[in-house]
Image (tube, rainbow, N blue to C red; front, side, top):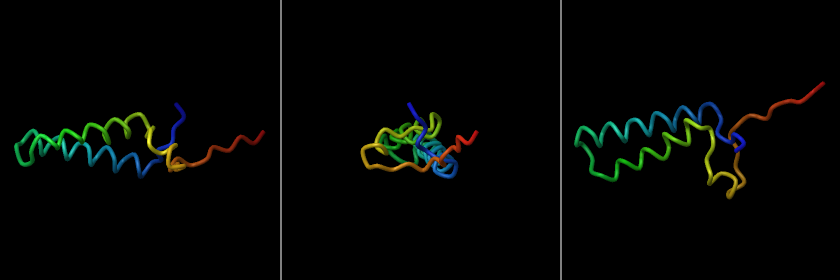
Length: 66
């Protein structure tokens, strides 16, 4: 798996996932809040399986100059 989730995207995914899970655990929102696991995991591993299908990549390019 090659990283395709960049810094800001990664932070937003982790925060959104944690917020959804916390709201579910406190009973503020229903069971659908467990969907927060998806952005949390994709942010944690820096890979989103949908990005290649859409041709997207928010991860900065790494220079390979000698």
